[in-house]
Amino acid sequence: MFGLRGVTFTTVTVVLFTAMVLNSFWSLYSLFRVPLCALKDETACIRPYYGPEDQLDLRVYISTMMSPATTSTLSLVLHEKKFFLTETWSKTINVSLPDNARYNRTLYLHIFICPRGKSPLQPPSNIQSIHAIVPQTTHAIPESTAFNLVGGSSELKQEDSVGQYRPVSHWHPHLNIHSVTDRLLFDRMTTPNDVWMIVKPIPSTRFYLPVLYVDQLSVLQRHMKLMEKSDSVKELQINYSPMSLGMMRLLNHFTVSLNSMKTLGFSDKDLDELKGIFVDTNIYLLALTFFISFFHLLFDFLAFKNDISYWRKRKTMVGLSTRVVLWRCFSQAVIFLYLLDEDTSLLVLIPAGIGSVIEIWKVTRALKLKFIWTGFWLKIERGKTTKNEEETASFDSQAMGYLSYLLWPLVLGGAVYSLLYVAHRSWYSWVINSLVNGVYAFGFLFMLPQLFVNYKLKSVAHLPWRAFMYKAFNTFIDDVFAFIITMPTSHRVAVFRDDVVFVVYLYQRWLYPVDKARVNEFGESLEDTQKHKSD
Image 1 (cartoon, one colour):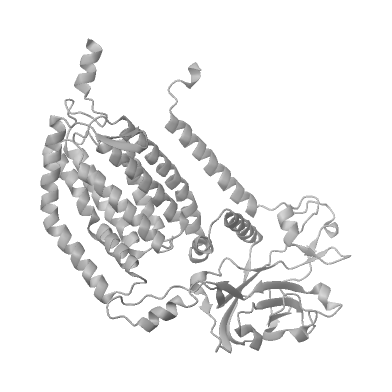
Image 2 (cartoon, rainbow, N blue to C red; image 1 turned 60 degrees about the vertical axis):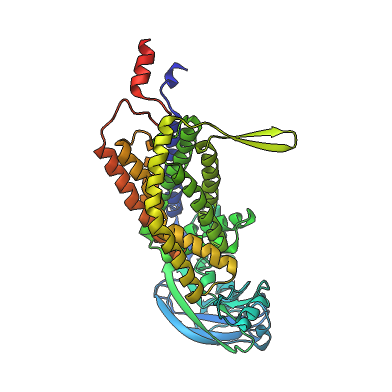
């Protein structure tokens, strides 16, 4: 074990995360590097049947049937007669809805690519045709309607409650079609299984049909249109573009991952946020996001680990603002309830919930609370405070007194304005929104007492700087995610607000030199440690 001396838990964690990052990037690289046919006789390889110069037909049908026997059961919505696989185009059409589709029936789109002038379902052209089926409607619960709580229309509220939790049909306004145009030669013995599953060889030949891919990742709930019973025509935008095989494999793997996440309990809204990252983000920015997200996870883990270690070993509250600890606990709980009320993605909700639990535990450490069970009763005892802690508390109280004159009028004024002029879903929603707006807009003021305590003591040695720096790195990483992950606007603004506070803390660390007589975050000073060793 001598060789492991000096190896810390943080070092092991960083090494493991680095290995995970390298493995992930190697996996992504493997998706774009497909083994091709290496046979000397290329005629023995499986080759594409259609080339970029071939003129084909693209037909899109709509039907309530998923497996039609003939085209007579289908309604043609688009017939592109001069279709080339390598050309990119976009068209907006009006689709006439079947009469029976207006009553919560599921509609399907059937996409065919077939030889010019041939029927896609009749032999022999049917074996030379590509067919894809996608649902065009989705059953989902409509969004709750907000209304003005003071003087609002009761009829609007009643309409919102009727059928609020009943799924109804929603129309997908976009259809994105892709096909692989790379003229690749495959060998069945060396082709990966995921590639072979999407390649469709023509029977008794050495040719395969173009790989057709209908992008379901771009089908987002926020883009869906509610279908009314009176609707007879719906607008549909059809987009076509070629795609590389590597990108198609990446999207297929991501779709499989989303389906597995759904079995683990993630809702459609949570998956919608992840799909939105792929749809709304440039591919290079997406790669940068993946790279940054690994560091975000690493810093999150190390920040939690060091924060818990700091408060577990903390013996005194000298130099720390107790009111700031209480405020962080309250604000974190309010933010969690607000995100829960807004149906925010679990990607944001889970870390907020974990942070709330940790902040509650930190309050018990800051107040020196002890929980003792006496039979069936729980007894709570609070520890004694020292003279130095009382001095810190007086500075803390003085700072909070100054802030209260500014904070409470702003919070109450914002709550009254929101009640009169902003629509809410319920009174509970108004209370949570008013509290969280106060937290986001003026919450940084509660971080100022700690700055005031640092100023009075002329020291920052009592702060948990290791955990603080991990959180600082994560705050700047959050600036990137604020533009990518869907979240409430107030939550996004709060991310940039924290940057300013972190910069002030860093300035104080540079301003105040190291005082060896000051106690550190564990209630110890360097002089006491040296004296103890000399004794």
